[in-house]
Image 1 (cartoon, rainbow, N blue to C red):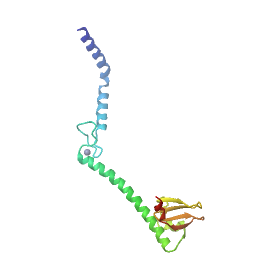
Image 2 (image 1 turned 30 degrees about the vertical axis):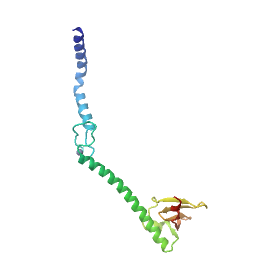
Image 3 (image 1 turned 180 degrees about the vertical axis):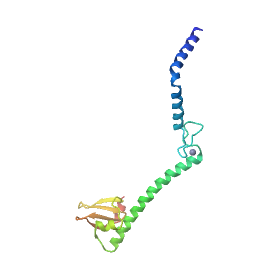
Image 4 (image 1 turned 90 degrees about the vertical axis):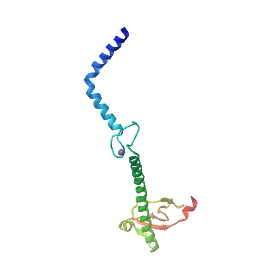
Length: 155
Ligand SMILES: [Zn+2]
């Protein structure tokens, strides 16, 4: 009996100490639980298991589709830039223009950030390629174009 009383007294002491913070605890509890349990797609509060990330299958599908779409958009956009670069180099090369000024490429909308690969020749000449068309710097902002598709054979 004495033991029980002792426990009650102790509980009372703990409760007395914590009571002033009751509002703080309930505030924290509500906010933490709200933050942890919002649907990643629609933001609604999730009911049920605390490890759930989505409120419904529909929301999970939406979320994953959007992720895939963003990734696909990036790949598509980069691919578009590379194809545009290739088209510009190909047109110039096919017109017989082997030496061109960088500004000419800029004017045509060439994007120097994107290329598919870099080839360094045995003579130390470094070519940047967009698929089978490439260029190297030959000084004074001039470029020498090259067409070469044989590098694929070595892969
Ligand atoms: Zn949702």
